[in-house]
Image (cartoon, rainbow, N blue to C red; front, side, top):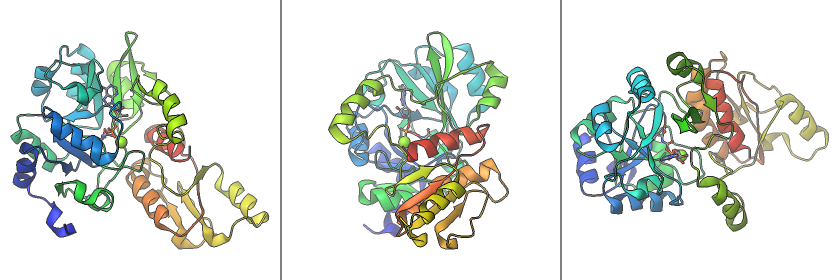
Length: 337
Ligand code: TXA
Ligand code: MG
């Protein structure tokens, strides 16, 4: 199949595929998702297969209204009401008790389902016409960097997807923030596009899980995976080329002084500064102005660009640990794991 025949902005084609149990990549404001009818178990199984994703890693369901969500959940507590009204459509995912209509395959057997109303015009139009929610993880092979353009999806999943709905570059560029209750306390399980500072204005102090992971299966499975496949789960959002985090200037001096590596074998992913020793084509500056939103938009694209270079190592640095900087740093730490 050619790129041309698979990528397009036709909602009718997307809808037909989804109604026939096929896979469609959808644009959202965070990253592109790999979507299927959440009520169709065979279709959902295709998502896991296409991504090579373990079935103990549950999926977020996407829809266009709180009323629809209430049909699929057993409880919609006050905190969810407040957050939903304030931030949806937006980069926020809520964990809510599921009704039996949501297949166990979607939630990996967990009692809660992750739900989100994405903020993307084309995808909202599509969701409006569907009478089922879309289960959709990020549209990348398991463990790799999330896609922020239709082309990223095509490059990696190609013919495994029946249609890629072209919706331009993702405006936010990092995944949604995931919130749920744990031991009666509202907890952030994954830092993401809606920042903690804004969330706390609406619902008060939140607990933040540092090694953001909302999946209670993952601890035991990380142990299993460590043995079976060298820690797949711990490393996420990761380029194939090794990435190191730290003070870029110091790391550069270290590599260059012991002649371990040639200057053109080093790639740089910096927040806002240029490093004159390194060829420009190997340098990616997230935001020259030091703007967090711009940095988030560029993050995954730049990691992909660096991954295509003929280099041996990527040197990267953390951003200030506040606002969107926290979600970006979380992705950088995983990429460098
Ligand atoms: O921005 C986003 O959230 C994107 C777009 C496509 O919506 N989606 C996304 O999905 O990032 P994914 O599958 O790549 O990451 C979803 C995370 C996973 O870490 C998964 O373990 C967690 O959400 N999750 C999903 N359902 C859950 C549940 N029922 N309980 C706990 N964690 C859950
Ligand atoms: Mg993902």
